[in-house]
Image (cartoon, rainbow, N blue to C red; front, side, top):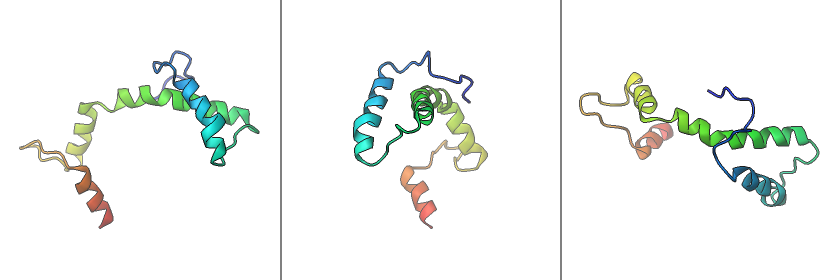
Amino acid sequence: MQKRATAKKVVAVGLGKIINDLFAFQLRAKGLNLDRNPRKKKALIDFLRCLPEMIERTMTKANIHNSFVETGMIDVEHNLFPTLDGLISTCKR
């Protein structure tokens, strides 16, 4: 799914600064401090910067539709999708 190793040419402009600010202030205040291990922090930030592009490429209507058809969760004749409430209620059972 992800062929690039880094987010050097990332599409989401400004996301790196937002993520850095979250790590520096809000998440540190809640107990997450990755300053002792900068390599892990950089790798996590790099992954989070690539995430929107990966989701955009993989979550197409065709990909979603095909997986539901293969598992039998979509009525092919009427093309009805399951609702989120229906999926969650199935998980609760």
